[in-house]
Image (cartoon, rainbow, N blue to C red):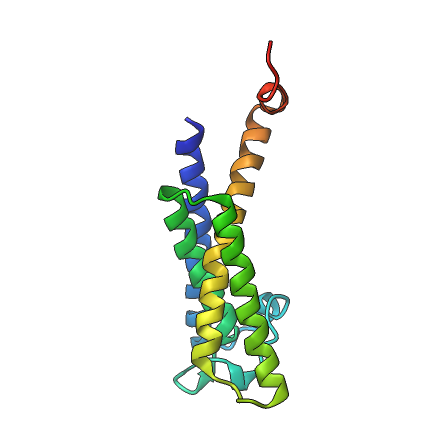
Length: 161
């Protein structure tokens, strides 16, 4: 029963991410300050690093947009696929290294502002991190629903009676 409820948590987070992406895209059609205030806390919003729709920059940069997309797809993927913890941890370290290399190469001047590297590293980061957030949300849900049983089951699971 917890697995089924955990699936709903993943679908809820996926829906929220798609709503954020849709809000960012459709906010270019209005002159409201809400998108800038909302996404300004999450993204640097530099115009030269954003996609444009009809000559108006999106309120989030390329990397953040793809992080949200990877986050949404990752939550859907990890509902059905349970990878090894060590393997996904190694993948996270690898993706973080790729993102660090991308930022370092740009700072050094090896290249400047390649949208595809930002999109790729952002998508991979969102995809891998979604596994850990889904595990954390499931754990939080189990603890909130039945805190006594959850603590006991974790405490006594390694003990013999």
